[in-house]
Length: 321
Image 1 (spheres, rainbow, N blue to C red):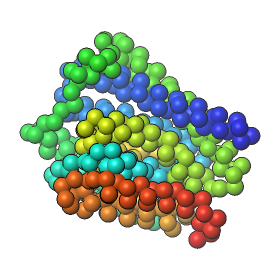
Image 2: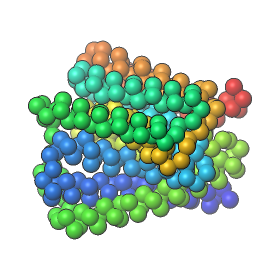
Image 3: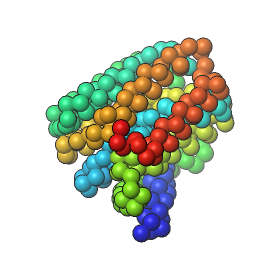
Image 4: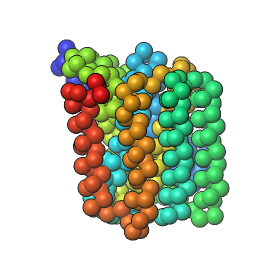
């Protein structure tokens, strides 16, 4: 069964990445043709589209009776966003930081992480908690929109249109949107099924698979975007993507899942992994603020920490600790 599970997992990852890219193009195309503000597009359409792989996998896992993969995916993705994506980007090209953005988005990221930890310690994240998360997300988008309205650093939608990444009509954009959603649905289903089979065959928990394999897979779009941005000298794009994605992963994805079904957070996540998430979230802010840039030394440190985190997940005594 392992070869089939690996094929399913790989196929699911491919569909997630491809579906996410197609959906993003469709979403941006609809925004352009609808004459929406580029800033509003960045804060809502693009940010949500890039988080849809995590959303689909988490919801599919939760409704499929394996919520540990979904919750592990969120925790693991947020850890990977900070340690892996920021680390890799910092190694490629030092990331210039803007204290105003880091304070605002970093504070929301800290608050969202703290909310998740408190709710996890209560034992269950339910419908009311989901409503609270989604309401907090609306507040974040509103505050971000108001805060940037007078100091706009827009997404260059015209360059996207000229490059061919944005479709030429609303009909084409809508079709791309539907194809992208279909790819995400099929990819998430394959990935979750393959991950469950791998976990059972390898004798590790579904949580560990969610924290590592699934989290890495759903973070591939952000990882690819960050790498390209760093190579092209726009490393600051990766910073905004990481901060925004971590907020959306908790407030949007766990919020939506909690509306659909109560979430039980696995004991091993409550015992260890969510505290790792808290530690790296708290540590990231001063690292981003001190010195004006997130350079190669900090990036290498973050990458080493991520490797240590992943390796520890498969340490034989980890589950018993």
